[in-house]
Length: 228
Image (cartoon, rainbow, N blue to C red; front, top):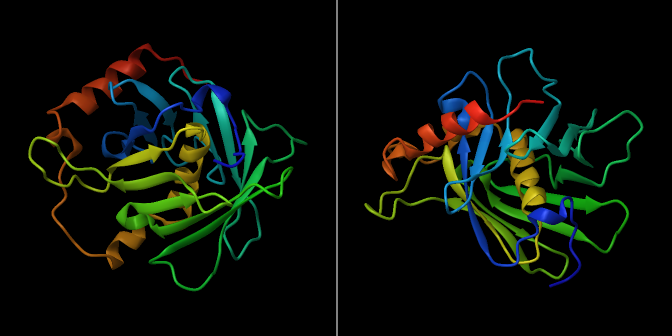
């Protein structure tokens, strides 16, 4: 695999890793995310509670304890919906590590997004697919698959779960925090309103996979976590 962008070394996985991404707006007044590993442990979180608690043009990906891992900031004005990524918590004067933008301003049902790494032009990424349907692939400059977003299926019933819960599959040697940052940008670029233009299907609550486990885990984790 070619040289890859690393935001946080501790999240560069040695083996292929499947993370479960859950939109927490199901349970709280906000549009956040919680990300779990295969053991049900919280790995990443994004909190956005209420309309005035956070700058809507800036998102901060955190670890389970509230430590800022990656800040994503919308660049204005931008017809291509460009976002820039900063390591940790962004401060005034900080230089971004990378930028993410839509390849074309025409057509939104299919995703085509490019990622530019500022300090290393040889490292770049292309995201293709349809994020509203949770079906995207991330390729590096060598056209190798480094991460993938796909729908999650309940292994006990073989029922496809709703779009509010999905897989983020990270290949060995790729930074999971960077991959999740790309998910956050895709969610902002596409927006929930695009679901209206896609194929309708019965939504299955994520608790179907393991009744009440995700909700209980999320609540218990946040009761013991510190907020920053």
